[in-house]
Image (cartoon, helix red, strand yellow):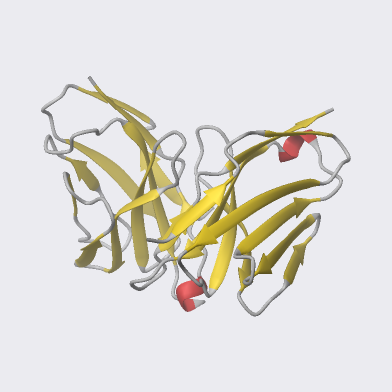
Length: 115
Length: 113
């Protein structure tokens, strides 16, 4: 079955450490996204990529970095510069078939806890 | 700035009744609006999209309306079932390019037998 795989589901890190969250898709989608979800708030866009080797900052990119070396993969690194890294991180993808109206397909998230 | 508001209080209804969830937005005129369902600990799943020139969209027991004058979308689930219990998110197309959706915080629906 096609879909998006995020790993691991739970991740624990000490403050000051960088951590990389994995996101892989086999939907053959061009665009991929990273969102952050906090209690009581809407999903907030961290980074997005419309094509391989290209990505743009979203609304809350500070303290995060990404790469898009392959169409299938869009890993997110949470650096020590991110002041409040504890959150639920969601990766998504979309096709270009319906242009701007293409729905997002989400993975099942990684819950990161930094202590 | 663009803002989406969904009722933060959970909606509790009896099985078989119609659930109605509200999504209000300000400072923007979106070309379309999407609704997603999210179960605890899982990613959102796309349900429906409605465009600004469409008043209503239906899919099985789901119905979405879009009132651009009131700046509001209503999401209805008819003949609700306990399996419909989840958090429902609305999202509108943000400015600034390709598929940059702005999400509301969601409304949790609990359907009781």
